[in-house]
Image (cartoon, rainbow, N blue to C red; front, side, top):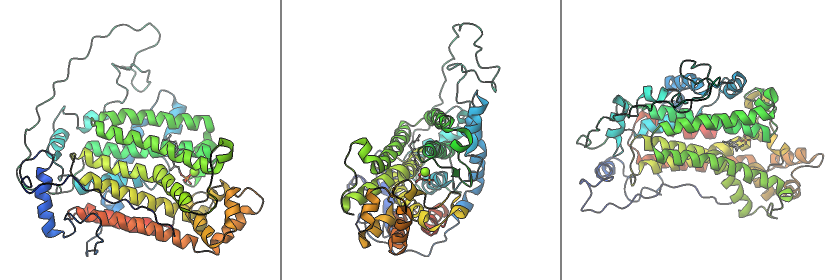
Length: 472
Ligand code: FPP
Ligand code: MG
């Protein structure tokens, strides 16, 4: 097996002994907290970032059950974000949200929010903003229509009193009176920061959970055009039901709505993180296309042997198209909870999401060999049909050199797909892919040891197990 990098938590800036536990911006509460953590969590020392952990007997709640009402609510209210002046666009934009999905990305956002809210140096301000009228964090503020009638003047039949008519030329409007923001409290309350109890979620974090799901669905709308998928989640895919053009446009429309919702969160670091995810998704897709269409694109294709290069490209693509959204989505949730620069909590979120995301996609890739339409909601073997060599095929290549020519000609000749499936079956490719997924999932669980114990942390631990064992 080729070695691949498993993301580790990066060390925060070292805290000098003279400043530990004192009022140093961005450090004070973490350093005080870290000292306490060292007593209760031996792993939370300066060496904790790479040391293997002994799993503790923890209560591990079912991740989905822990936030089931929130997931249900965010699914219902998400549809309100998708209205457009064109009913057919609204219909297709909502289409994938009407079929049950795993909601894994929103789940990660919610659980990481709960597991870290209260710990960051800026938590008291975020909490205050969420509770304080007009401070930008309230659910009401977030729920105002995404197209501001006084600025954009979109024509929108669902807002007839507010939106401008196009019957006449547009006249000058008086500007809105400036918004008087209330003054935030100057200092955090005294004491060592702990995870908010009962577990807390901010409205901005719930909205972020919706945003990551919208981006995911936008990418699926485009992906199903590229992959020519007939099915998605057991029903006709959007391109099969509405055609390619509308599917692409609906994906773009979702990204437009997402951008407006993102800016409403009022946190430029989060805007940057999520914008970079969209770029990553496209980069991942391009990398995947390049691996299949290298010749047409006039670029270097697959390396001649199943070496480090091919594994690197495969894992890089896996990060870009799947893990980036999970890693940066989780990190963004922690930033929204008031984690400041230099605090470790957002590094934990990123490392967890990155490892979990790669594990998730590796399992997705092996299920393509193991499962079929009944469990996946789409036919098995789709990757080979698309000319893609994923983990199981790359491992099988190590054991059966005859896999090489099949991969290089993208399983194009009659019988290639069947032969490749057979070679994978006669190799340990599927098991080794699951082992690789487990290594990433274990690393995801390990980095959680930095966090104080909570039900949300236990649920995140349970999720690492669930991702590796899933069968659909
Ligand atoms: C599903 O993978 C697809 C993705 C995870 C990402 C697709 C990204 C793009 C098409 C780039 C455009 C992105 C945006 C945001 C517009 P899969 O094909 O392996 O899984 P599947 O079997 O579920 O289709
Ligand atoms: Mg696809």
